[in-house]
Every structure is written in C-alpha cells, then in structure tokens.
Amino acid sequence: MPQAPILPLTERQERILQLIVEHYILTGEPVGSKTLVSEYSLPVSSATVRNEMAELEEIGLLNQPHRSAGRVPTEQAYRIYTERLLRERVEHPQSWWQRLPVEVRRRLIEEYRNLTPDEWEELFVSTCHILAQLSDYLAVVVAAEQRDTVLERLDLVPLNRTQVLAVLILRPGVVKQRIVRLDAPLETSRVEAVARLLNQRFAGKTLEEIYRTVQEVRTLWEMFEGEEREAAISIARRTFSERFDWEVYWEGARNLIAVEEMSDATTAAAFFETLESPETLVEAVGVPQLVTSRSGELHVLIGTEIPDERLAHCSVITATYSLGGGWYGVVGVLGPMRMRYLNVIPLVELTAVLLTHFPELHDTAQALTAPSTLRSG
Image 1 (tube, rainbow, N blue to C red):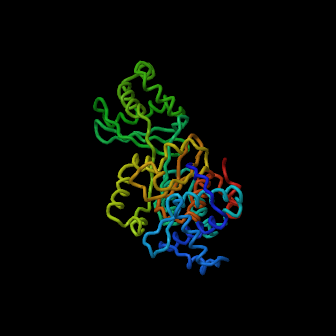
Image 2: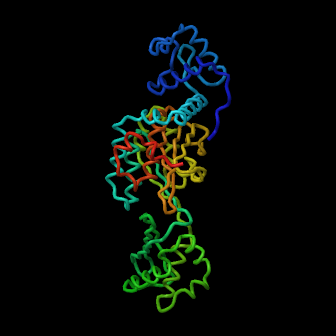
C-alpha cells in the first residue's frame, strides 16, 4: 500500500485535518473554521483554526474552492486519514469492530449462515448484494482458482452436433462453464459416454495436472481408446488447454449514480466503461497485485493510486480472502473519494473474514461479539 509522506503536523493540525475530512464526507460542503469550532467544541478560537487550515493548505492537504469558501480535503488528506484508521485497526482491534453497528454485523453474518456450504456461486452473488446494500456503493467480488484446484466432476450438455457445454464442478463446489466446439459432429447419444470417459481420466486431478496433460497430444492419444477417443481428446483440449479467467461479480452501480462526484456525464461514462468487461474491472481495482497477499489483508487505493485513470475520482477498499481447496480472491467496495471510510473499511474486512471462514459460521454469538477471533493471518 502506498505510504503517506512524513509531514510535520502538530497534534492540533492532525485533529483539525481529521475533523475536516469527516465533516466533508458527511456533508459534501467546504468546511470553515467557525464550523469546526462551534460543532466540535475546539478549545481554540476560529482565527487560530483558520491559521492552521492555511498551513494545511500550503502543504497540499486542503483546497479552497472559492476565496470566501471553507476548505475541502485533497487526495493526500484522504490518504493520511485512512492510514490513521488502519493504524487504529492494528493498535485497537476490539474497539475497531465497534465502528460497525451491531445491526450491520448481525445482518451480514445471518446472510452467510443462511447459505449452504456448497452453494459458492450463490455465496458470491449474495456477497455483492448485501455489501452493495450496506455500503451504498459498488460491491465487487473476484474469485479465481489456484493451480491445485481439484476437478470433482465434468458434465457435458449437448447444444448441437458440433457444440457441447462443458460444466466443471470444482472443489469446493464452484462451477465453471465453457462452450466447446468439436472437431467433428458428435451424436447426442454418445455425449454421456464421452463425459464418462473424461471423468475416468481427469476427475480427482488438479487443473494444473490436467492442463499439463492436454498439452501433449501423444499422451492424450495413449490415455483414451475406443470409438469415443477422438471426441474425448477434442473436448479435453478445448476445455482445459486455456486457463480459466477470473470470476467477477459486482452490484450497486446504481448507488453511484446519485453521488454528486459521479454526476458529471464524462465522469459517469468513464466509470461505466470499467464495468463493460470482467477483465477491465479486475485491472481497475488492482486485483492482480492483491491476490498474492495473505488472506484478510486490507488495501485502500485513493484517486490516482487506482491503476485505471478513469477512476481517478474514486476510492477502492479491498480485502483478500480464501475459500480453501485452492480458491482465493478479493472482495471490495468502489465509491467516490468522499467515501465513508470509517464504516466501509471494517465492513469490507468483516466480509472477507466471513468469506474465508464461511464453513465455520455456526456460533453467531461469538462472531458478533468478537469477530477478530475469526481473523486469518
């Protein structure tokens, strides 16, 4: 995560900067010195606060939209603010969780407890749905398999004489699909026999083992026999010769339409461009760099730190998770730079923790009172 530069801020300046950021996040209005003194009972005069704000502006932490207006935080101010929150998370883990209302924690945990352990597709969809609702921003869940992911079963669904739908059931119950075009026509009556033959050879093996096998035509030819040999080889090569891409789920784009910072037509168009393909969204939120992190690690990208310049007015909060069996991924929230970090950061972290420990969610009381006991890493 990018580190904020060491700035010579006094304790009072740090407090004033924190209040300005939080007030601006809450109201969206430039913050003046009189507002800070009256609403937050600062033990100094408005003139003193005004002088401190002028210094914060001079070092690049505040902007003044108009001469007579108050100040608004810059991208660097948000960075300093969020890093302070992350330090508090490490130093005071128990009180950190209390930032998230107990009703939110209860609703989130109940959502997961109502899902069955093998419904992984539903798990990802439900995660996006509840996270978008609770954050009021765009929720993103990315899942990917590691090389040691095991093929539990392969089903073939005939589409026509030259195409079948290959359905891969992968441990722990995740489903992948790929339309396969055959080298030669295959009668529907023979599809089941081909599927049975493929399962005899590949079920129980990792995707990496299968991937290496299908690269060798001679090995495949020796592996299969009988009248289904050519069809089996054709389907095997087209199903497993390419690695599966990320599985990307997202929900909540409508939440950002009402956000003032996203209301500009050009900004909104650029944002929706990032949702046009899974690959674009994955790159935009920096997923390739995150999956090497250990499960449960938090990341905050603000403005120009986001890899995709079309999201320069946004912030992204992500956390990594692991489902076991070689499955891992990233869960996150994308919203305006004026995001409610105080609530969203612990919300994203708790979601990643619940995803990682999904099969273990039986003791609701423990999870509600001490979610830190579930932390991985």
